[in-house]
Length: 362
Image 1 (tube, rainbow, N blue to C red):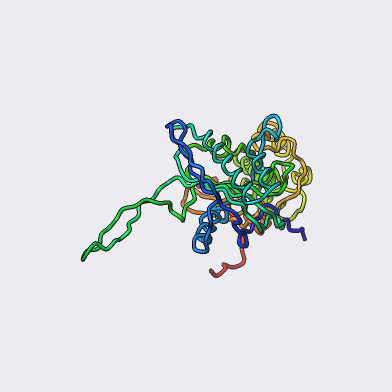
Image 2 (image 1 turned 90 degrees about the horizontal axis):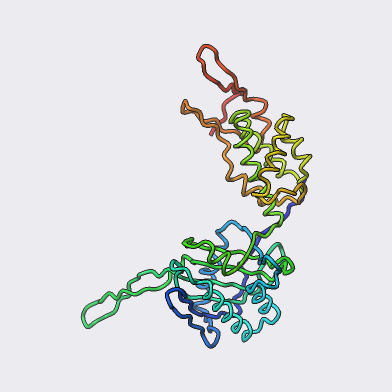
C-alpha cells in the first residue's frame, strides 16, 4: 500500500494575526499618492475574527498551487524576498511595520498601469500556520480594491432616512498572498490569489516576482496534464475515444498506486502499443518544456494532486446517437474486458458491445 504524501497542504484554523499594518496605495500613472500609517493597527476582538475570515477564506477554497520568489540573476536581487527575510529575521511589531511601509512603496512603484485600481494594503505577521505538517510563521499581504455600495439608516426626527455609503465586501478579497517561513533557500513557499484579473502580470510578476514552486505537487499535476494532452492529440487520432479515456484511466491509476514516478515503468504499464511509446517520447521532446517536464523521468508522487486531477478528468464517451457510455476510473479492467468496439457492415455504423450479468440498482 503506498505511503501517503501530505504535500502542499495548509491549515489556517489556529493561525493568529500577531500584527497588522494598514496603508493605502494609489495609481502612480494617475498621479495618485500612497498613504502610510505611522503605527500598526490595533486589532480588537470584534474586528480580528472578521479579518481572519476575509484574509484566509480564499486560500481555503482555492486549489493550492505554490510559488516561490525568483530572479533571473540571483534571488538576493528580488526585493520582496529581501523584505520577507527582513521580517522573518526580526519579527518585532516595530520592524514588521517599518518593512510593511517598504512593501507598500514597492507595490506603488508597480501600480503604473491605467487599469490598476487604488486600494488599501494590509500587511500582517501570522503565527501558528500549518504547512506540510510543519508549524511556521507567515507574512500575509492583502489588497482591497473594489468598493461596494451599502445603505445605512438614520433617524431624522419622525422619519427614517437612508444614507448611501461605500465600503469593502468582507466576502471577497481582491488580492492576497501568504509567504511562509518555509523553504527559504528555494525562495520561500508562497500562496497567492487575484480575484480581479484585469492585469495578471501586475500582482504575480511585477509586485511579487514569483515562479511556480516545483515540488511533488507541481510535478505530479504537470506530468498528468502532459499525459492528458498526449491522449487528446495522439491517442485519440491513432486509436479512438475509448482508448483515449482508457489511457488516462491507466495513467491516473499508475500515479494513484505508486509512491514514486519512474517513466520507463510508467510507459510499460500504461501503453500496450510499442508505436505509441515512441510517439510519447517524441511528444515529450517536442512539448516537454511547455509543461516543465522536459528532463523529468523520476519524482515523488503527491497523492492529493492525483485526487485533484482525477476529479477533473472526463470518463464519458459521447456518441452522435445521443448515447453516453461512462467508464469507471476506479476499475479500469472492467472497460478493458467488457467493452468492445466494432463495425456493422449492414448499418455502416460503429458500435460498442458491452457485456454484463445484471443491471445494478441505482
